[in-house]
Image 1 (cartoon, each protein chain N blue to C red):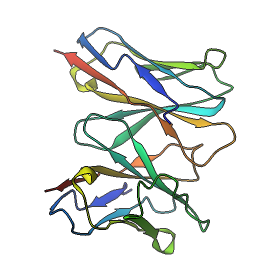
Image 2 (cartoon, chains in turn orange, green):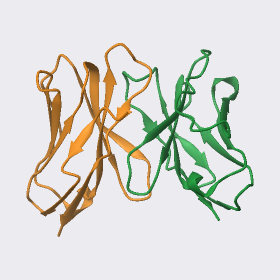
Image 3 (cartoon, rainbow over the protein chains, first blue to last red):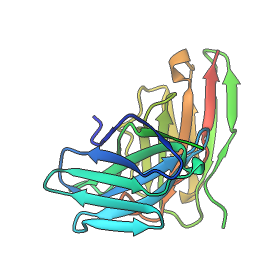
Length: 112
Length: 114
């Protein structure tokens, strides 16, 4: 069964605005990863946050992790049209370091 | 360096035929994954190879699906007697060790069963 669930399922914003996507999961994790997928392409890794971390930054991306709420958020600041893509979270749940459990993704549209 | 390479990029075949999909992982990566993605959906785990260990086949949807990884490098996913519901994008990913490291994806094979 799917562990990660993203919300919203779809998000449409204007260029320059911030975009926030959330991911919830069900069991304890070792780490949580965010990926981006452009239409017709494979997934690209964005950020990995470990269970003992609360926040990570990479350029215009900010990821937070709240293990007490079993949730994570991905914030994209000053969005650009090129950020238009689907964003997925994936969890490596504690006790199984062999494969990731994937959410269904958030489809982000950034309008110029 | 080269990323994960998948071939063919597109495959159209008739129902009942067998298909083989190929994945060339990043050199030195011990973990290799196959996923299936239906239109507008998330990733469905199919199979996982880690080094010389027995593969985790728990995600294969039926016995028509099989995969092998030769010499710890190239992998092929075989679907026998294809059905229309097999139509999807098949993605391959590799990582240096396993789930605690980022996965690197190929662009997938878009499989269409007529």
